[in-house]
Length: 176
Image 1 (tube, rainbow, N blue to C red):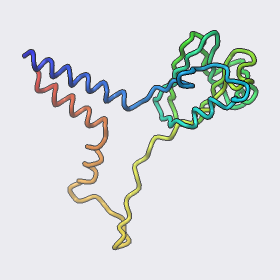
Image 2: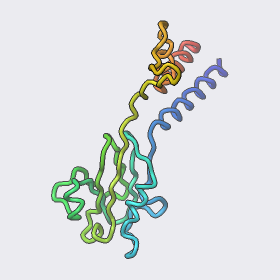
Image 3: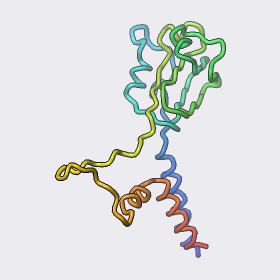
Image 4: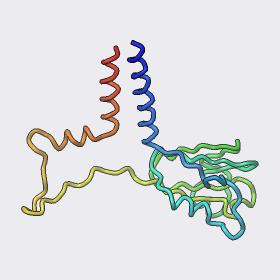
């Protein structure tokens, strides 16, 4: 019974890795964190954001000292100020969840820091849609699912959430 509990524990730990793989936490600015850029490098955060691919449910980790982070509208981003930000935090470490596709605008709330380049635009990618049906090159038609529904079944089985539900259900019934 002890070995089965150990195995169940390993399956649980594996499942945690599986769920964390579905989203990523990015530390803004890398090792430097959220700091005022050097005078000649006022695009450092936009360059950092452009090098990363963000998707819905990823999180941004802002690490800073004696500063703040604000999520603002595009107009407020351009002005480098906001009276009513969408999000505000000044506790030294802020986590912001990217909860939708589209553009997010971040600025520092400390006077003058945004003007010196402490601002960033993050583009969150759309959720991938199901790929279009593959064209049949020899007949000019499109491929269609078999009568047994094998194509639909392969799409369901390949989905990470279905795989996880299957694994948890399978291993749960073994040990109960």
